[in-house]
Image (cartoon, rainbow, N blue to C red; front, side, top):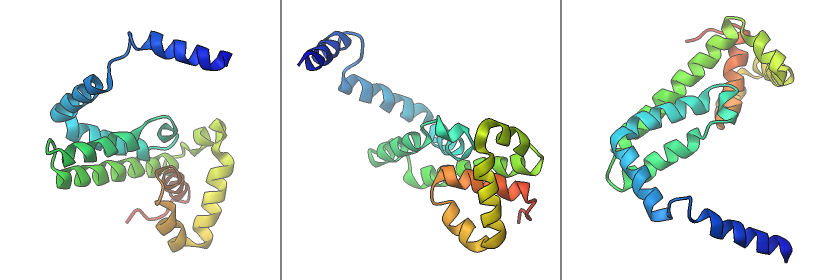
Length: 155
């Protein structure tokens, strides 16, 4: 009961500092009306970048782009093209990280076991790893870095 009382007290106090849901939607709507395509591109690119994708809400940015495309503020076709282009650029940067030897830095950050496992998986089952690895952006980033470490052909 005490925790419930504290929670309700915090909710009452914070209502004075935070905007209402309608104000928040109108602010975000204006922001997407002005910079929606840029947000979609950068959100998908950040979501595809290795290590950064764990901390950045790229999927939320792209999802909100789809919501505002539904409301008519953005064109959905352009949004999808920009989301794919942003993700592709992110995976290319991940590949270059592995290719040019930044994998040592990645391994020192504690991802050595993941990249090692992904590298072994890429060597043994090339097609399956690539087709299933890019289902989720976090796993796809590890696959792209591992492909760079193996110096696989880019094309």
